[in-house]
Image (cartoon, rainbow, N blue to C red; front, side, top):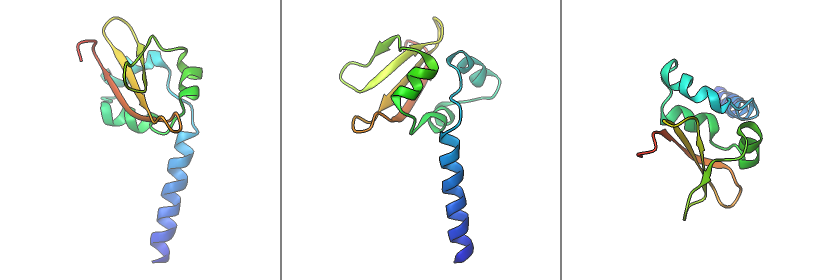
Length: 103
């Protein structure tokens, strides 16, 4: 029982520490997809829980906003978009979509 508690605490601390790390640069998205095989899950895991302010500090102002939903759109070129959805209560990333404009 004690080991499980210590392991759970270690996981929480590890995950908390990961969120305080540096946010990858917007121009790295294409390489993360093509070289490391990142998909929706990996991008969501990397950005979930980050504040909108931290993302804007790292990536600059978004190219667009979602209509009717709380989120931002960044274009990493003509062929690739990153769409972030936020929780309205705390401005934290809840979901990420990376793809082409014809989503």
